[in-house]
Length: 155
Image 1 (cartoon, rainbow, N blue to C red):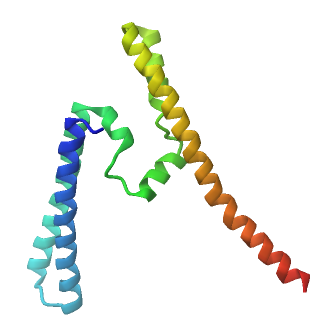
Image 2: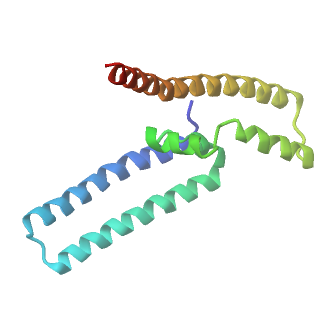
Image 3: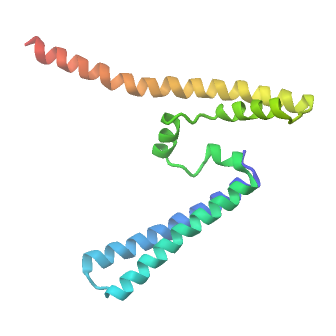
């Protein structure tokens, strides 16, 4: 379930992507038809740059409100999610940070500790499920390739 920060950013992101597609469409038309003057083209590129700046401004504002919401970003595409996973970021990393905070000076009540442990178990289960699925995607093509090589060299 998403919180208010996630909902607001997701709404912003969806409209941002639509506007981005419109700008890109305008650029493609300008490129293909060669109908824009250099001044008009520079103006469109300036709009596109400002549009990207708005994205990062909104993202950083939302991160200041709720940083944890951005660790499981619903607006990332599958490739971006895979890249963050492959570079070492997994949702369970949050628990390491929480553990460090608890060791330093943050005190949690028993109900919070219980909820954290439940979430830790669920997160670990989900991570293992994803890792098995990723392994299946990696191993499957390799075995097919090996079978093809065996057939090729058999004759």
